[in-house]
Image 1 (tube, rainbow, N blue to C red):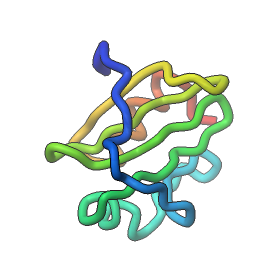
Image 2 (cartoon, rainbow, N blue to C red):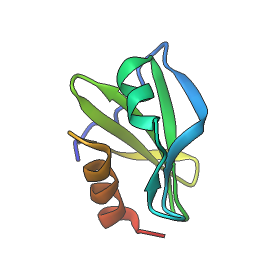
Image 3 (tube, rainbow, N blue to C red):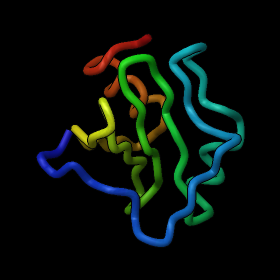
Length: 93
């Protein structure tokens, strides 16, 4: 985690049909490819938080939101590692 809350890069647009979910601990097929190859961001849906996920500078990033406010920024080389880091901190539900 970094001290900086981080933010989705300007110009990136949200993709709504792909993402990560704590409901079934899944990363949708095709999500990684879209993040790596397009100027897009997607969601990490969970019970106690919601995250904005994007790819930048050879890493996946997530800005974690709780109660309508950004509270943290994480980065990892893979989506599963990113999901694990955030869920260990904010919950697997």
